[in-house]
Length: 127
Image (cartoon, rainbow, N blue to C red; front, side, top):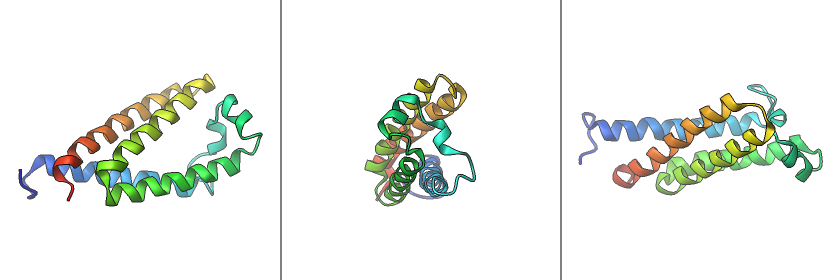
């Protein structure tokens, strides 16, 4: 298929690529500032035990990973879309383990499906 403006599959690919480049980068940057949310508050008790109470430092490391995932999705969506999907699965599992935040876990399931769709489309449309 073509990569022209009238190609709806290509348009969907670019929309999803934009979303999965921008959102992880912004969320990753915010892990350092906690403006959008207080990110350590989303960590499950099990994760808190692993990080030994150093939740903010852990979230900053998470932020670096998210920024890398966003940049990677810009350059190599055929690989990084699936990495983002796995990352979202890990977030969902963590959220379910908190016993709270089921609404956010559901939202992240939708994002995971979008990342998978981006991965599939990228095999056709990514250069």
